[in-house]
Image (cartoon, rainbow, N blue to C red; front, side, top):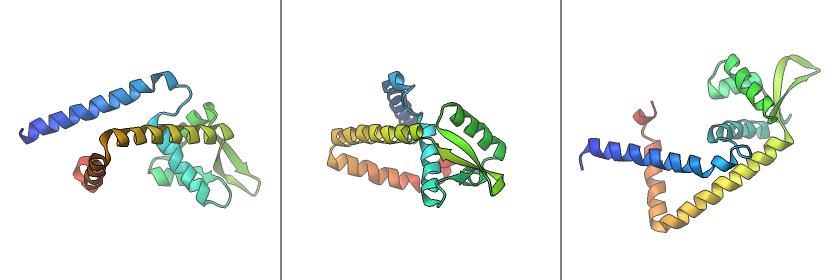
Length: 150
């Protein structure tokens, strides 16, 4: 098999895996986050957990994700409407807007993580120890390959 055929096959396999993952979770759309939301909120939560206040400035979110303040505002508005985040203005710092997770969002993140990890554990068991170790080794190597990420 030549390199073009391998690239096509790999692209097709990624597509099939993504499609299967999405269809497996269709019935749970309302209860669970999209992967993008889970990853975004996970990064924000990690930063909040590092802070002393239990909150993060919207401007810090802009810097972390390297997106404009307007994009952060739009993202936060979406998450506010879903009841996951709330904006907070502190009495002593009225110029900055902070973000705080709702209890519902924290619970959903926990459920999503448990669901995701349970699925990955099943996949690891399906592959077996040797193949799952090989997959991890290959993905670690792929992660270091810059051009594919551009």
